[in-house]
Amino acid sequence: MTMKTIQIYDPPMCCSTGLCGNDIDPALVSLAALLKQLGGQGVSVARYNLGQQPLAFVQNPLVKTLLDQKGVEGLPLILIDGAIHLQGHYPDQSERAALTQAVLGHELKGAL
Image (cartoon, rainbow, N blue to C red; front, side):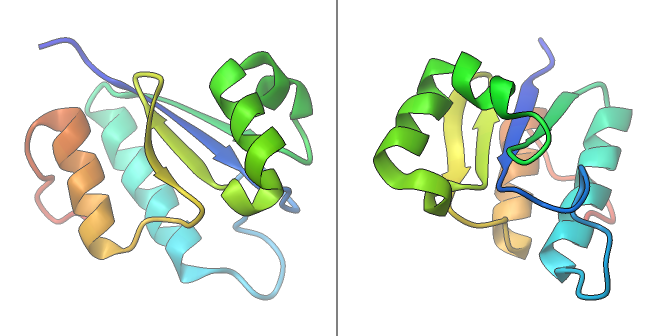
């Protein structure tokens, strides 16, 4: 089985993961943990922050089109192998399970 690639295009945040400051979104914590687990399973994970890496958003035609149409409200955007998997919000628990299933073909034991 060929390993999948996940690309996450985040709205502007104070740091690359959003896990900084005093008011940390629990969804970001869960996503960061899941991405670490998936990376450990051989999945290629790339994450881009609009505030720090705007060129990455412009260089991807799909992402640029989404930004042109929806603005930052369309973010975050999660792509699997270049196709939109989720947009406009970070995944909840069931969406994280679906993301894992989509990239690994099965759920992770003990996944968040």
